Image 1 (tube, chains in turn green, red):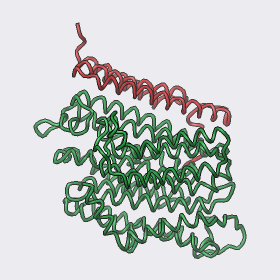
Image 2 (tube, helix red, strand yellow):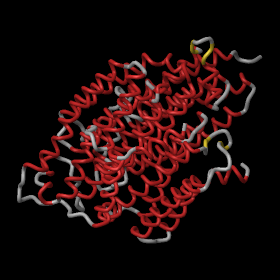
Image 3 (cartoon, one colour):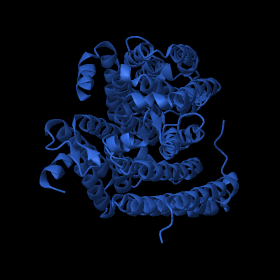
Image 4 (spheres, rainbow over the protein chains, first blue to last red):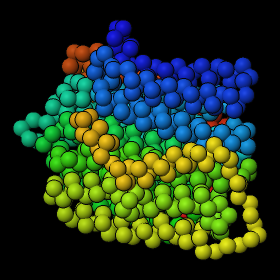
Length: 471
Length: 101
């Protein structure tokens, strides 16, 4: 690896290096608070570096891109890690998390996301995905006192390692068919005369299974609600925003590279997307647990995103990137509210325990309400612009049926997003006030998420232009 | 004499199916993990054979990455199995069903 290449990779190197440094300092007995705040600073440094230092090369060792697209997502995931760490400050201290390990794993997961989003080769995709999955396996089980945490982890781990095996076998078959791991060659190698090489087709099917698992596409979604419910709330938020987002971000250049041949896989993906929208919506309706409802809602959101992928060549890819940014902000915020309301023992999960929150903690209740409305796609919030972009691309790309289904799913989603809101604002029970008042820091972080949601909803122009420049 | 590429692919497909079968049929966590290892070996076999087929070394390099990450994954999995065994006294996958709905 040459000097310019190392310099181009500098933000990711700082992330990975920071993770090791904080792990060591934790082993030498530095306190939880100090290390977590240090981790926030190193993540913020990474975002600054990635934004300010122009990369010297656009690709490093044929594995990872360092162009503006990769840099954009490096900034996004570094900031997501910083927000996650800030939100975990009190939550983790109450539960006696090890500061060094927690910070190191969060930064390592962000490293994996940054590498995965910028991967230009199948090996890069595999390594990025493994790095972030391995970090998340431990993070999900981080609360050692909770049986749910361990159960969530074993479910994610067993299914995740099967998905890894599918991915590895799929990549091996694609390599056997095309003779290259590098994406443009690997994509060109499996298509000949407008038809897929049988080995290549089988390879892509296996990769689709792995991607479907990681992004919780129906029918590979069974782990999602259990894992989101069992994992510590800040980790669930980071998992939903980042792990899913990074895989989808890696898919954008991959599918864009397919060009018109991407249409060969359309029938399969259309079926999976429709199934995802229907099953996700129906399951979300029945939930009375906020984290499980958010899990099913995230399944539906992935359905919308895949519509964007299908309509990729008519502006869908840009819409997907915008959607990913919005989804990351909103998801971190929603799980942030759960984190902030949770006391030192149990988490706030059931709708019953949300009763009267709107009267006692109006700021956080209002934040949660606006974030949920953004997930539903109500105008004046970022979610509306994001969804609008996807639907517009879908109609341009002639996916009328799917768009109609997605609009119906959005209408249905209002019901399950408004249910917790109604509980918060209509029923006031004076007794059983066990919710944590939260501290200024948490309120400030939630304020940032809220502000970003409203700002992107009312004035999305600059970000849309920025994303347009990435392609 | 070299083994034809097609034969290697058939063997790998069989290995992958055996591994997947073990994951789906066995209920002990350890056996499930062994099943996953067999599935990964199928990928390794294809990669090594493809390296000979294309006369390139990069897929052999990927094998090294693959084995390293799988080892890390198994390390985490076994640590978790030990924790769960201490907590519940079993390594039966069906015993972990508190989260549902």
